[in-house]
Image 1 (cartoon, helix red, strand yellow):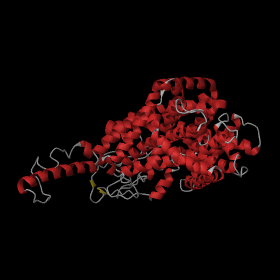
Image 2 (cartoon, rainbow, N blue to C red):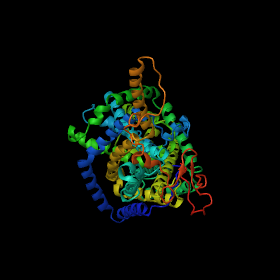
Image 3 (cartoon, rainbow, N blue to C red):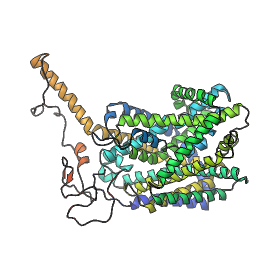
Image 4 (spheres, rainbow, N blue to C red):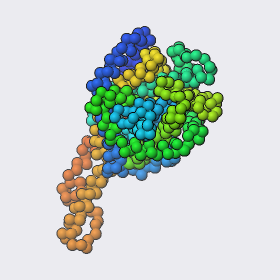
Amino acid sequence: MDEQRIKYGTDRLVFSLAAILILGFIAWGIISTESLKSVSDAALSWVVANMGWLFTSLVSLVLLFMIYLGFSKYGRIPLGVDGEKPEYSKFSWIAMMFSAGMGIGLFFFGPYEPLTYFISPAPGTADPETREALHKAMAQTIFHWGLHAWAIYALVGAAVAYGAYRRGRVPLMSSIFTVLLGKRQTEGIPGRLIDMFAIVATLFGTAASLGIGALQVGRGVEIVGGIGKLSNAGLIIIIAILSAAFVASAVSGIGRGIRWLSNINMTLAMLLAAFVFIAGPTLFLLNLIPASLAEYLSELLHMMSKGPSWGGESADFSASWTVFYWAWWISWSPFVGIFLARISRGRTLREYVQYVLVVPTVVCALAFGVFGGTSMWLRMNGAGIGTDESPQDLFFKVLEQLPLAQITPFVAMACIAIFFITSADSASVVMGILSQRGKPEPDKKIVVFWGMAMMGIAVVMLLVGGNTALEGLQNLIIVSALPFAIILLLMMVAFTKDLHTDPMMIRQEFAVQAIENAVKVGIDEHGDDFALTVEKASDGQGAGAEFDSHGSEVTDWYQRHDEEGNPIEYDYKAGEYADGWMPENGVASGAQEPEPMESAKP
């Protein structure tokens, strides 16, 4: 994509439609909170009852699809040009994965979710608060946060990276569907609707994280300050303060803002987890974590099958937890997928799939093993903690049971606040890219607008949810993720068609056919004693006899165009445009400089 001549700018239709929908939703929530609550409840009931099967089937299908891609013949295809080296070292690449798709949720659900399954196990799995329930609880948690979640992210990331760094497309959700819709439709209404749905899904999914982050920071303020329960107004003030910090981060740029904050936060989060591991039940956790991973792998197929067909209790559990998580990961997939694409250039598809699926799953298992294992151990040893407390309350209750309880809440609050800021910053950049025709460095005013929209949704969710804010978040995430779930299904079809006509696959088919032809002729003419040489074959006799090398499906995508979309001559061997345009300055030699625009630099 950095060799293409792309005219960036705000897509007025995508931006306007998404903005109107979101602003209208925010206004509805502020003006008539009760009616929004009743509508969201009704919409949730319909989606879970009629479309819950779609979420459950989709995530399993995506996982199988990504495993197939990684270990099939397509696994050799690089997410870049042939011979290109990875942009980042393996250590840096893996380290950056930790900040994608994780964050506030690990603190909010870390102690709470395993403890919930320990006290109230999934139907038909174990008796409450037994050793069996202990391991089943950890396996169920890893199931929700592990391979299935990261398969969704991996699909979007691989499709975006392949299109941008191998086919020269802009990093938009719509560009993935070029092979299905054609260039005209991709740049027209269908493609722009896809980008709009991606923005809406990202807004609601990220706003949910910001909402629970505000709840947890608010609880920390109550504990540290010794004040009573904060009202919704207090939580809104916290969101406003964090929003101001987000704007400062966004305006300062990636290098000075989000990267600096991310480095600090990863250090603080690892120190906090290490402290809980060492100050908590270390030996217990050393035994629990590997046993939980083994239990997860052995029960994976069984957990995938649990749903309404197992009865009413299983249906309720699936709707409350599993479908909620699948919808949440789907809503986050445009944001995390584009992030993964930007850091994975030069990796082969096989390496990408292996690391993106396995490494974050192991990290999630370790994080939940430390926080959730500690909360369950405290419960088993009479600490008096349970799921009667809210998730944000339970996290601080666990810290109270450990040494340095006067200090660790401040560290936890700092981590959550920084996760809030960096999540808002990163997601806003992605939404800016989607609303500015793939512009790698979107305008700051667009980034800030989408950040403010996320804050507005977070506020409305808290107003709608009231004292049960998490329920309000859950309702809206599941409903908003439904359109993008259908997009993911079509994305697998489009990605497969792209890979099938990849130059590496075509060469591989040529090689198989050429060798087969040569061996047949060699044996017929020379017996065992023959060698292979390359020479011109007669028409209809060579390796490509059945292949149309001039077909549009294998030639159109590498035709170079100017900024207006008109075909232009290009010397592929020299890597030069006929009019002298260079990617460094984006200006053709001898031509008048156009309106300022950035080159497509990834």
